[in-house]
Image (cartoon, rainbow, N blue to C red; front, top):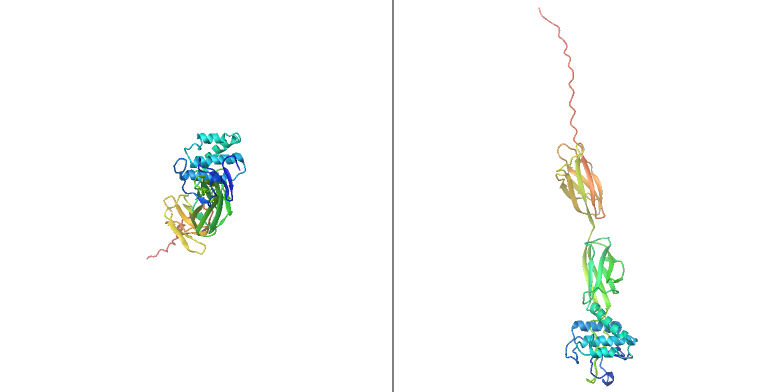
Length: 355
């Protein structure tokens, strides 16, 4: 398939993994493909790190299945670099690596490709983690909320172009799936249907594998071959509590005659059924604040006025939109009884009497 490295097998293209040993023609056949969890180089005797295995799997999976000779040669060089680090076949300085990429029948672009693959794998190879975060909380029944998602690689970089399948219970989801953008993030929307719990799950199921697969030769003098690993997956779950949206009201009490605030005035707030849901008094500034009222229409009832003032009439107020409603109540002084005017008294002169 390529002048360097790529051999066709029923499982896909294979790349040699043991520099210095004989090629596939000397293998006497190969056993079934196996997932590699540990790799010891037969060229150096060193065990490849889990990170290098993941990076090799990334490049094999993304670029290994190719009919482009330069691309196959670059993948071949990358495989040796990760699994046989420090050998003459490893980039960036291995003598044999540079010789093989400098063959007359290998395009100069092969080395450039290999260098790019190494840099990309360092940034975006797995294993992966899906991260999900509610933008603002808590969730409110009937109100749309946003969840920010990203998929991070082993290096912590956010991976662009990853499709996430969504599974949401207890709320209506804006879409069945989202895909991370060029910045590696995606936004999902959910609208809770009722109070309770919303279970939000996001699954990325077609991520590059963190482990390559290998074919072992029947004859140990031949090289093992590396195949593209299967896909890996990652998921995130959020279990969010939903509650009814609430608001509040601020009541301000003043005197009608002096326009000054009245403190110590007792009030009650009643719901649509007439049930008292809050009681309290105005402070020295004539203010009373009521919090945590569910959306709806309420009646503000003055229970007891301060001495010298009449009770104010009930007022209706609507609570909604997560805002605090303002209510102004003015008390009118109790009229003083009129002072009666003195009535003139005419005394009739009595007749004089006597001897």
